[in-house]
Image (cartoon, each protein chain N blue to C red):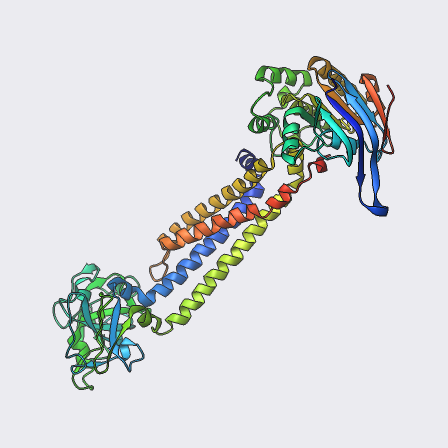
Length: 352
Length: 224
């Protein structure tokens, strides 16, 4: 560590630039990963918040809740306990006086069931009457809707009063409007005896297969969300390549840095300084530079998260912090280890 | 007993028609309190001799003894330890670690060799003798050639080696500095009881030598 630290102290400009590069690469990784994960999470935000394991839908709906309609006949034998909620889902366009119109997902739910009970309200209260709704908080933070606004839904001619804003209520990237199931049933009244779109359950063993009703795992359900699977693959590949290329760049930089010092190492080897001391110096220097760059990037990320507008779907999750930081540290170690062979093979006679 | 003894040492490089015999069955010895000069033109084999005497390279044939111990077949680790504890080097380009101040050059020696270094009092005395006391917070590139030379000598002596090997120690010094360095080596050999071997082609150092060897085409002949 002595050699590593002293060299950095002497060559502040050179090592400052290397730290700057590591910082920028780390920041890029954290930023793009957070944006990708944030965007991807907007597909499943509500589903994740419900904590569900199983979904029952119409077997002809291609595992799509908005396309699914279960009738009273389909649902005659259902058992709806504390771990189950029924949902009627429809995409809607809403507007309110003085506000811009929005595309959203209307979710008709029943009072007393867990989705209704577990709403994480950031303002207001849960809906009590059929003409009251709670909405995702982005209605407020991004689109400036207020409590008391009267929403007009294109699925019915009626107006619904916003009585609460809910945290984490997005599905398929669209904000959710939680209203009464009867609103959905009215909108779907062209189909006789409609009950709901589906049942969601927190019980991993919950199964209900009757007539047109079929049970799916939540994983299957999520993967069939419109565009979700392809988006996930794209983001995963993007982040993986970003990591890989960044790591190679940093490792190569650290390698070149070490190669430039081989003559100094030959001199030190001639003086009897052991290979182990030199290898330790190189690795600890790589780690020192990497840790400094990563810590700066983390600080900058927290600042970025704090100042970015709420509309930006950023999720600087602990998994990104841990995997990104570990990835960079491993890169630092690899970057230091690659030239070890050159150090071991140094001929101290070169110093003469 | 000689501190360093070289017996029938040969060193060849390359193979077949490209083979070069750098040292041809040479014999040599040096004792404590002596300054020994190995003189010869460039390409005569002086540097090869130095690397073998300093355990930086192994001879193709023959034996090398330090304090009577055969070091010819030492492992890389044993050689490294030998150099750290018993052999000091002063190299042609001085080769101070460029990113360490003069003070930190000695701290580095302390970090890697924890025992038997000179005491602080003796180091200060050495600094005074070498006239480098005021340079301790400077980096090598802030020093003149003569100053770097003296720091390199101090660093080599700080580890308290029994043998000091110097490669062209006066190559970039003017005559007055050569005189100064020559006297210094002579004094260090006597006062610090070291065997000092100077590989050089500088005749101005001859008057400070107890023994002089001539190296010519890989052969070593004792002149004085």
